[in-house]
Image: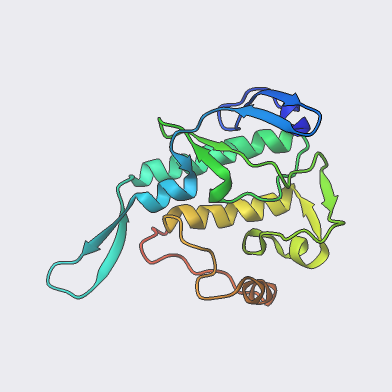
Length: 194
């Protein structure tokens, strides 16, 4: 809440409208984002497509490629603003981006965010390993560069319409493989330009 109070209104960052610190509780009033999380929007846009005269099936989106790339641009704009305020988000993922009725994405969920340019974790709190950079996972160092890594994973989520990163692998197995140089392949339906 204290971190969000420092942010001025930005079109791609969830706005704190008000707050109240009662004796035993903290209340926050946030913008209403009618469509829920970006992950929910992506998954609900999926449409199963059967290719004529073949047994092949593919998942397509009711959202256009342009709309998907606009989502990515809006998240990037929000993260640029957050970074310019010397904040490390530490949990950027499609589940932590909210979408308005008119399909505007806003970065949200600042529960792991820190008001520092570099943060060293001191607690044993469970972390989102699939979205974490190597230095975050191995050395507990979180920087704007590690947020950029998470943004790359979020781009993969957008292109795959909300699929779970590193499919078929457990989180720790995925990070071990990433540390060895593995990178997720380009999704089959993703254009080379994207």
